[in-house]
Amino acid sequence: MPGQRRAASTEPQYLQVQTTTDSRAEAMDLAHAAVAARLAACAQVAGPIASTYWWEDGIERAEEWLIMLKLPADRYNDLAEFLTERHSYDEPEIIATPIVAGAPSYLSWMEDETRPE
Image: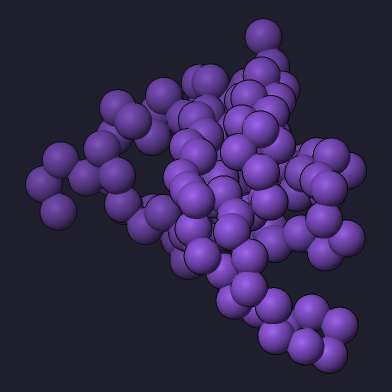
């Protein structure tokens, strides 16, 4: 793809990680804290969203806020631990989707912004 950088190996080099919370305030706090800790280059909060899921033998419905974080794949474990420690849910959704292509300058920016100074 012109203007896109693709990973040469089968291991993803970049990820979008998502989690959800039950309040906008918590979503904004988690997003800010992850970026401030340089575990993600950017975080976006969207919502409210409608969620339907199994919990304790029943189907639940909830209004939630979605946090999407962009980062190099080698920062995933640190980010997942960070989110798990700070999240209010007993079993938070923390899932990663590979970024298979992107503007080279954006991907470089993600690398630069997630390295401790």
